[in-house]
Amino acid sequence: MSKGCIQGSTCGTVLWNIILDELLDAQLPAGCHIQVFADDVLLVVMAASGGELESAANLALHHILEWWKSVKLMFGPTKTKLIALTPKAKTASINIDGHRLSFVPEANLLGVILDD
Image (cartoon, rainbow, N blue to C red):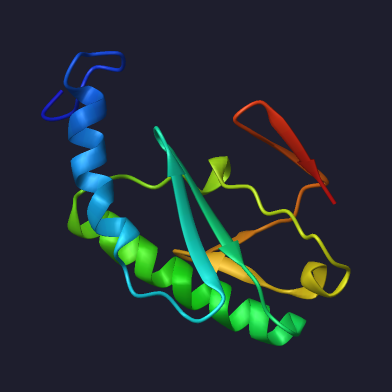
């Protein structure tokens, strides 16, 4: 292991918060908002149409991925979940780092199940 922080370590949470603070200040497209709890990052995207949602989400994810790489973190696209809260949102093609993300009918966020 060349770098990292043991999960559950005393300083792990503080170090993670210091790193993520920069992400919370990132300039994202209109309608995009980031929320963080521990090591979970939630991107909320609101738009008037499926096309606007697709554009805003893909641009926001591009900015997030660039930040992710700049702090030398690895991104796991298979762990990324999309949930559409409107039928129009399901038509959006959302991609990150060459991986097309697919919508799921429900996602568990901090013990709360969100469903479409």
